[in-house]
Each structure stands twice: as structure tokens, then as C-alpha cells.
Image 1 (cartoon, rainbow, N blue to C red):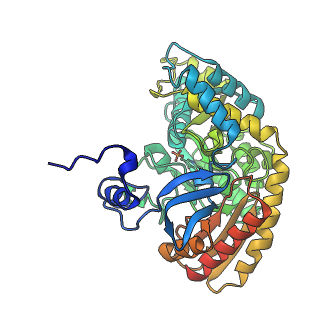
Image 2 (image 1 turned 180 degrees about the vertical axis):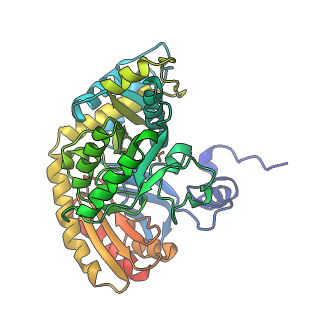
Length: 441
Ligand SMILES: *Cc1c(COP(=O)(O)O)cnc(C)c1O
């Protein structure tokens, strides 16, 4: 017989919680039981995480990760708390089939107003990966409805990341990434070379030709091109010239292929533009949003599409989009998302992102001189130190915690995406921690 838990949760000590966590709880990208012990967070406020059990002598850490790039306003924000509380008292959830409600309608209208012009319609999903599944389903169904069912493959460039469910995995970087195991089982997509690195680097004519040729050659079987615009996140934290996005738009138009921008990581100001598509001045046919959509409060994502895509689907043999998550349009999540976007737009967010960019450039310059560092790059509120070897994750994380900062390095990368409310002193502290992690990792 398993031991029953002692009374109320408060009766569990940090040690007991961590022992139970190790015994029963699966963590992201981890084995079971877990190898590394997670830090136990008791609460979070502003840019600080409070630990229930100190680590490296620290009971409070400055958050350099925005909880996987989502908590742009920091934690426990009064405006977002009020939005959640207010909605909770009306209703936390009702089904979206046959019913609708103000928070979802308001959010959809806001997203249509803010995103590039031709995006008109919004499908609300419960996570980024699901919004990518929906985007792919939209594109395949569009061509099927138009009598071109052979157009059912996707093209992307290497080095990308689009999520962990099936279709998204098939367009993640196929080499060395965490989904390599599934090659041969996943749908086989078409991969272009990774875009040449550098946001400010002039576009490489040979690469432009490569993109164009590949799209032209596979046009008959391609439903869509899907990419992360300007910043490839979890696939390697690399930046590329917006000129490549314009080239994709031209090639897709020329060859009857839809263009999907996955802005789940880049949306809502992270790169210095409200959406990364803004750097290129081009609009996709389908756009995915997630992560910071709710300011990091609740899980929510959105797939937006043009009127042409929606009309195409609606002309088909099956004139509906057969997708409808149980928690679609969740009122709590949509109310907080609407409040989070309102909060963002009520501030000089672009100036704040610029301020953090300057702080990251200044603070991370020192990393360039550290042995084993291959590259240091900054764009908007994203700072990256790339090593010439795989990072020792435990040692690097420990070094950052010693500096009072929470970082989560991966592969050969130590990076930060702090909340936009991070003050200059805390940005400097995060940079010192990234440098320490680079030295010890
Ligand atoms: C995180 C991420 C996803 C997946 O979102 P989840 O909410 O984790 O499913 C998809 N695309 C990009 C670009 C991401 O950064």
C-alpha cells in the first residue's frame, strides 16, 4: 500500500516535497526518476523567484529566463492578478463549442488589430505546439479544398524548433536535436540549409538562390513553408537577416505555397519589433503566437490566418476546420492575455526592450574574452553566449545561482531572455551570471 500524504500540503517540508517530486513527477526533457534535483520555488514577484530551500546560499534568484520566455511583465503583477481574479469571479471556464464570451472576443479582435494586415481570423489553442498543429492542418486542408491534395509537405530551414507534438517535431532541426530519435517515424519534410547567421549581415545571394530553387523544385508537393522569423529559439538561439523572410514570401507567392511564421518565441516585442515579421515588412498567411501571450500566467496560444486561407478551407468538401480543444478559448487565459497585451501597449515597451538590449550588450561583452566562448550575440531582450563545446549544464546553472540568477543553459548555449521590467542593476547581474556560467560551464 502506498503511504497516504500527511494532511494539508503545508505539512510537507521542502525535503519531503523534493523526495516525492523525484519519485513521481516527470520534468521537461528529463528521465524518470530525474537525475538533477530541481530548485523548489515557493513564490515569485517582480523579477525574483523565492526558493523554499536555499541553493548555493541564495534564497532568492533574479529570473533570467522569463519562465521559458513568457513572463514578460515579471511575476505577481497587480494588473494581471486583477484580470485573473475578476474573470475567476465571473467564470473560469465554459466550453467554446456553441458558446462564446467577452474575453475571447476581445483578445481575438486585439490580435487581428496588432498583427500584419491580412491576418483576419483567430483559432485559440492551449499550447504553442497545438497552435502549430492547427497551422499545419489549416495549410494542408486549404490545398485539399482547392483540389490540390498532393500539396501536403512542409519546407523549413535547419536549426528550427516548433514544438514537441508530432507535426511540429517533423519541422524541428533534424540533426542533433532532441527529436532526432524519431527520424523515419515522423512525416518527412523538406529542409533547406540553416539561414546564414547574423541579423545585420547582408543576405548571401547563394543562400537566396538555394531557398528559391528548393521551393520551386518541390512546389507541387509543398503545402507551406514554416519558419521562426529572425530568431531561431530552442533550435540554437541564432539570428538571421530579415531579407531571407522577404525571399521566402516572394518564392511562396511565385509558387503557390503558403507561408507560416511561428512567432511563439518572438511575438510581443522580444526582438525589438512587436512581431519579428515587422523587421522584414512582410506578412505570413498563417501566424502562431504563444509563450508571452498571457504574460506567462496561463497556457494559451493562437493561430491566425488570412481571409483567403479561411475561405479556401470553407469551400472544401468538409467545409470546417476539424479541431476543437476541450479548453479552447479558456476565459481565464484569454482575459489575462488581453490584460497582458493591454499592459504591454500602455508602456514604452520598445524603449524598455532597447534599454535591456543595451544592458545585455555592455554586460555580455566580457564573455567574448572567456576561454571556450565562440560567439556572443544580442538582439532585443535576448542575450546569447555560445561555447565551442557542450555546456556542463549542472556546473553552469550552479555558477549562475551562486551569482543569484536563474538560467537554464542547453547544448552549447548560455542565454538570457529577461522580463521587460528587469532593472539595469538586475540586467547587469544577469550578465555577470551568464559570464560566470560560461567560465564554469
Ligand atoms: C516554445 C515554442 C513552441 C512550442 O510551444 P509550447 O507551448 O511549448 O508547446 C513552438 N514554437 C516555438 C518557436 C517555440 O519557441
